[in-house]
Image (cartoon, rainbow over all chains, first blue to last red):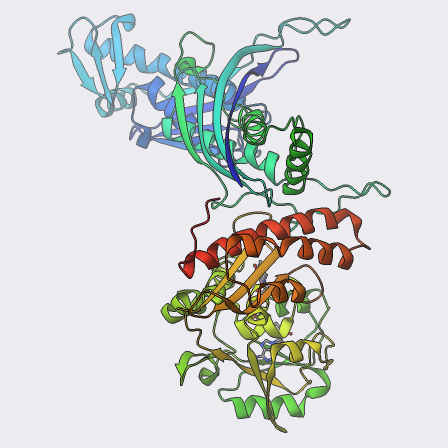
Length: 333
Length: 298
Ligand SMILES: Cc1cc2nc3c(=O)[nH]c(=O)nc-3n(C[C@H](O)[C@H](O)[C@H](O)COP(=O)(O)OP(=O)(O)OC[C@H]3O[C@@H](n4cnc5c(N)ncnc54)[C@H](O)[C@@H]3O)c2cc1C
């Protein structure tokens, strides 16, 4: 018999450890042709931290995304970036890029102010143009600004870093403020469970994430979709099989450690929720781990809803489902 | 991988000569999706490997005088895409379309699947349920036999009757009369693609004009060394008017048979015996729907 069930999972998750120092840095140079070199230590493992760095640099400098060239994770040249972990790179490396760009802006602003005769604080840098916020007709293009910089022998360079306010935790009981900011999410997931075979079909997942200001909405959606797949797989197929005697992992291959294929993942509807006023670059928060967390309890709850079981741990395999269903029928019948 | 000499003949006769000559240590390679793993892991260490991919005369799917004839080199992908197979032999369509992944189906062949005779071979389970014939050729001659006799034999590799210099060339079976005969396959696996069968259930049923069952074949792949034969279940159906209720009556027998056969493996038997019944309920519904006898609501 096929039975459907729906589950809800909610979470909040800390981003940017404050218990210990947690810095990352960036180097920036705007070149005479208005292209930009950004060098960061952050390892882009596919999640898009380099894309994020380019977006933050473009936004801060008033250039386009296409103007930015990011060199990343090359420890020979790049500054310290810290680990790509704990959903921290957008928050921390993003702020480092912003700070480095703001330093580079010093000479750019001084030069534009001289050329346009506008006080530095009235200047707007946007989409390859610089203009006065008092009179938008007083303006120059970025190439003109870089030409003026060249004539005056000025270079637009900057180094910057960011470290969340390290508050430290109490050595006695670890109390304190462990993270600088928090991401929030809710996932609602629907499954169809076959009570005869124990097969679980993941039908659809709606996953809403408060990410502050989304930097690159497609990337955020991609993170949510991938995270949902990872979280659901954690429930229905993934298991590290440890030999109780030797403690060796018995399935250290992808033919025996079963992750979902594209045929298995649910249809994911990501909802990106914006919020304001947080400490990330332009208010951005992390979404890497938050993406996967709520789909785990949502899947368990959906299975429980479908067959009236009370699973509280993962994984839940077809054999477990058939067994739970049989016991359930027995106690009812 | 141990080094070997490699031949790529273009005709069956050439291949048979080579196999005969090097029979002391020879492997033929079709798609290589089983063999290459064995070569890499030193489970197979032949001195000579003979590639069958250039032999065009082994790659066909055709109907002749009411008989399906399938060349050993027909791939899972080509079987899954074949319109006649899809319309007339759903069991083979549904088994081959779910083998591995698109890459595996593009390379892997039905001949390789049967020759490998693995516990979880899906094409094998389908052909056994159909009670297909296989044709074997060597320089010594040609023999055609039922796939059940093929599996019962102990040849060069012990897994089936194939001699070291013998090639499986063809799989054949009568074209089912779909008015009276329905076939079905259900693959139960750990995920929806690229997964080994936990149970590969196959069923063939024939009814007469009055809807009375005249023939039934029920097999469970991956339940034993070879697709498990539910002979007592079949016997219960034959002579009865086919219905979902009648079919469900076979399940307790199936349950006991699986329990009996798997007593030595208590950790897997619970799920196998329950899961198999679930698999067969799906096959029943599929068969009844195809024959237009009954719509079973799941
Ligand atoms: C990732 C992966 C997933 C898979 N998934 C499935 C699955 O879902 N279901 C399934 O059933 N199988 C699966 N398989 C196993 C394999 O793909 C199939 O058994 C396939 O049909 C083997 O065919 P082949 O042409 O690749 O055989 P090969 O590897 O070329 O040959 C297999 C064996 O048969 C012999 N042989 C081949 N052709 C002949 C012949 N004509 N005459 C005599 N001997 C012959 C070879 O010498 C060899 O010993 C999978 C394999 C992999 C690697």
